[in-house]
Amino acid sequence: MARRPGSSSRGPARPEPLGPEAVTSARKPDAAKAAKAPPPASPDPGLVLLGEFGRPHGLHGEVRLKSYTGDPLAIAGYGPLHASDGRTLELAEVRPAPGSAADLLIARVKGVSDRTGAEALNRVTLAIPRARLGAAADEDEVFLADLIGLSVRDGGGATLGTIVAVPNYGGGDLLEIRPAAGGATALLPFTKAFVPVLALAEVAAPDDLFAPPGPKPADEPA
Image (cartoon, rainbow, N blue to C red; front, top):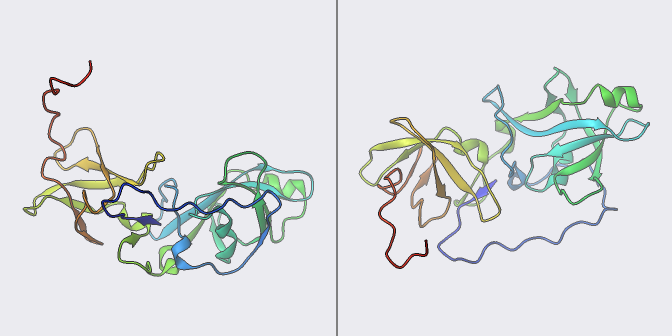
C-alpha cells in the first residue's frame, strides 16, 4: 500500500515493532495491509506477489520467508496463496526471523513438516489475485500494484511517461517514471505537492519533470 501524503514535512507515525516472540496465526487482514515494499514484477499481471521463500530453518519444516506486505506478519492472513511452482500453499504460522530485517520471517506451511519439504520451497514465490485485495479505504491510498504502468501527464494533458516502480529509500514513496521519449527514468515524490491528481488511469506531474538541471546557484557550495 502506498499513501500520498500532503505537503507536511512530518512523516507518518511508525508502529511499535513486535518483539521476537510474537507469533501470528492465519486470519484475514484488512485490505489496507497490501504489499508495501516493492516486490519483483509478477509474470502474471493479474497476480500480486506477497513473498518469497528462502532456505529451511531447522529440521521440522520451518522455512525462511521474505514478506512484501506492508505489515510483514500480515502475509499469514491471506489464506491460500498461489505458489510459483504451481501449488496452492497456506501459511500456518509466521514469526520474525532473528536479526534486524523486519521483512524476514520464519514460516510454517500447512502440509510441510520436515526439512526435505522445506527445501523444496526455496525460491518459490507466493502471490494472490489482485481482485482479492479489494479497494483502498482512503482516497489518498493506493496499492503499489495499481501504480505500476500508469501514464504520467503534465498539467496540459501531454503524456510524459509511465510509472515503472515505486521505490522507498527511507524518506517516503517515490514514483520512478520512464519518459515516453526514451532515456533515463526520473523519480517523483509521491505527495500531493508533486502529484496533485491521482486516478487509476493516470497521474499528473510537473511539466519540467524530465527537464535537464539548471545552472548551479552561485551561493551553493562546490
